[in-house]
Image: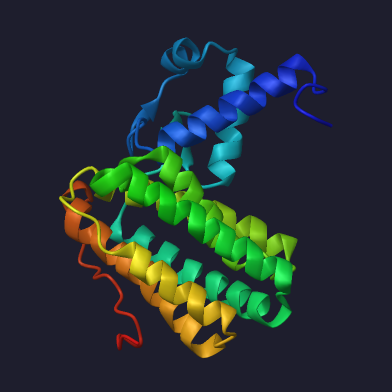
Length: 242
């Protein structure tokens, strides 16, 4: 069923869910913020029942927290959560990339190259502040999805997508305070080359380092937004660069 074929109420609910999700990911709705129904109804122009359905879905994605008898809040951020999220992403990303390298065909390779080319061109077009662009974020997400698209696991794909979106909220927090971005184009090209040459060991090591360095940058540039914690950011098991 296409969006045009869906009942109006169903399409409206999906639209509100998407808008709320993006507002949380982009920190328009800030971590820990109380989600008051009257304010939300005014913001999204929808009924209470539609809002409650969207909030329940977002709670299942761990972007919203339901408080007993007290409504909902935007899921808080913490170093503990970032550590756990990072470790889980590494596990799933590595497993999916391993499967994709073993299963990938010519179409998989072509899709990776096309996705990388689009991302690289957009980065050059947008200039030094490309990482603040939601358009670039969407292309960046598509590139990373292309790397693991041959994993042949719908369940892992769904889990990976949800974790990637949760991590994007942390990346957006970091981007608001950093002065410049690291040379991710070089990192991305190294990952592409390793994957297409079927160098599984190197590709997995590079993708893990890529994910963990992103988390380290979040702590460096946005750590002041987090509650005080004694937990340190995990160090990667192998920091040697190739």
